Figure 1 (cartoon, rainbow, N blue to C red):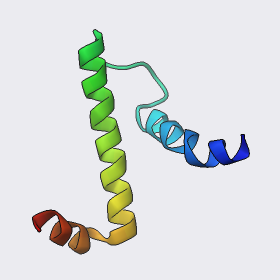
Figure 2 (figure 1 turned 30 degrees about the horizontal axis):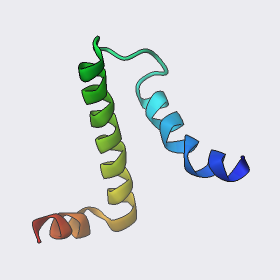
Figure 3 (figure 1 turned 30 degrees about the vertical axis):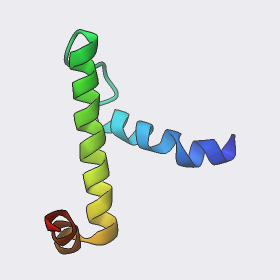
Figure 4 (figure 1 turned 45 degrees about the vertical axis):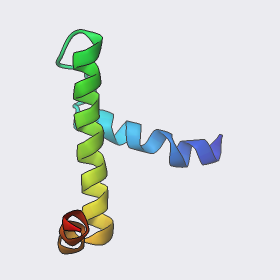
Length: 63
């Protein structure tokens, strides 16, 4: 359970905090799924920039 808290639940807690710890803005499952996908993409991009740096990430995306 301790390992699970460290690995799986941290990103979701961070994303929820970014969203303002509130409900989704959209209605209907396909719209909510799109909204969540956008949040996850933003989280992953922010993490990649923090780990690799902006220049390295841009170079990797261009190849």
